[in-house]
Amino acid sequence: MRLTQGQFSFLPDFSDDDIRIQAQYAIDNGWAVSVEYTDDPHPRNTYWEMWGHPMFDNPDAAAVVFEVNECRKEHGGEYIRVIAFDASPGWESIRMSFIVNRPKDEPGFRVVRQEVDGRAIRYTIESYAVREPEGQRYA
Amino acid sequence: MNDLSDAKTVTGAKRYSAGVMKYAQMGYWEPDYTPKDTDVIALFRITPQDGVDAIEAAAAVAGESSTATWTVVWTDRLTACEKYRAKAYRVDPVPNSQGEYFAYIAYDLDLFEGGSIANLTASIIGNVFGFKPLKALRLEDMRLPVAYVKTFQGPATGIVVERERLNCYGRPLLGATVKPKLGLSGRNYGRVVYEALRGGLDFTKDDENINSQPFMHWRDRFLYCMEAVNRASAATGEVKGTYLNVTAATMEDMYERAEFAKQLGSVVIMIDLVIGYTAIQSMAKWARANDMILHLHRAGHSTYTRQRSHGVSFRVIAKWMRLAGVDHLHAGTVVGKLEGDPATTKGYYDIFREEYNPMALENGIFFDQDWASLNKMMPVASGGIHAGQMHQLLTYLGEDVVLQFGGGTIGHPHGIAAGATANRVALEAMVFARNAGRDIWNEGEDILRDAAKTCTPLKQALDTWKDVTFDYASTDAPDFAPTPEVSM
Image 1: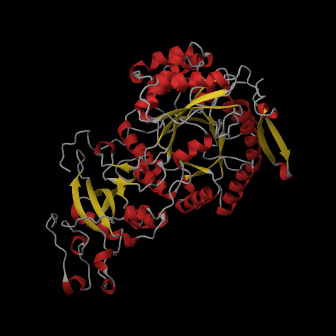
Image 2: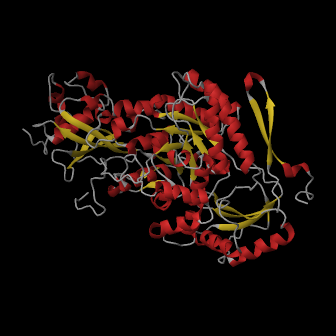
Image 3: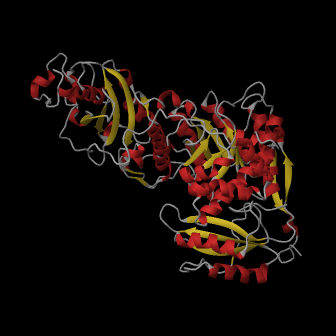
């Protein structure tokens, strides 16, 4: 499967230049860009690991590309995303989020159905990856 | 007789002698009045009957929407009646429209119960709309004071938290209404939901008239839809949703359906405008209490919003709905099959999404409006739109919007999932190009064609719908050009 979270997952995988262009758009809007990675891409896993702090005062997207590549050296077999954070009043949340790295094989998710009364079903979605302990996922 | 521009309020004992008196002399026309920051202000377009003076007509509207009756009553004197009288304070001829006038009317805040759209509307659009001396009457806009805005809950979730909950940022959301709108069984209906969501949409939607009919009862629909939502979520790793329409005959039925949707894990439910303002506020309160996104389909609004001379402008409905507390509301596409002039539609979108609306006559916004940190509403664009219009949609409507392609998804020659994928690829390619600094308005077709090189479903969609446009004159355009010549 292909994890399609993020704003550009239906496009071909990003080159470093694509990452730079999109990160620069964020910076030009005054948003702080950061890099995050995870080995559990569950749709409700909100808190991916932070690869350093958001780059609040960075004017140049080349630095974002540099950090993505540094992160790849340690976590190249995992998911890495770039996010842009907007601190302006009334928003104070994320403005952009896109995946820039994925494991070679994406195992995806299974649906666990618990059949309860009245034909209702309680659904659980589970990442196949998390059946292995942390550090051993995506071999 | 017909010119009352210097009409004066009659004062003292003469004001209360039994009989009939002109509204403009009873205290409902106060040309020197300066509205207080806490006043509610309404702007009406009035079309007086032949021979009825515009100022007297405006005063009558002020009177009939506040304290007046057709004759003098002495019991006024038991109240602080001058405070409770609405005051028409300004009447302007409508540019280029013979016999029509804009009347500005101010209402003291104490005329209204806090937090109640029902109470506000019972005055402002109550009896007055049937008043015989007027040929037609339209409520064009309202200024809601901060003090009053703060008595309302506002959108249960709001754009920011909706995005956080859906884990979806940086692009418009995508949806589709399940078609055919009537007749599918629950099992077949869920198939459409599954295909559309796994193909790349964020949402699917019940149509406004899907409730609980012989061909598909509501419980059945909810069960099959949630199977589809969860399957699609697992297939993509994304949060998916389907607007389960809980509209029903009674509040008890609606609460029952909403509770079931919640039990099944739905992120969103839906209601129709026809359930009424009080029911909408009740469901908004329920949605806030249950962490549920609340979608409102504006079924019925065109009966009173579309014609320029009579009714209520949609911009006013939008303001009421932001107060009432819905999260999603349909607001037009500009380019699709339903009514929507670009300038007017921009005014609606600003009302939905901004913290503060400055007066913008060219967009039909007559007043500065401070939303006092009420959550933002997500506009929904649906009705006759397709992937080939993506550059126009993104330019006109921006990023915080749900683009709903019903026919434009389900009608794809290679199936529903292919239709969904075509829309998603077109959208992401267009957002990428915009962020990269390209001129998407002029280069949009090239951008789509390039994206279609690596996406066959998009190529098929572009080939199928390339010539479809809906280019008709709008019935509800603004009265003022971008640089208004009239002094305001």
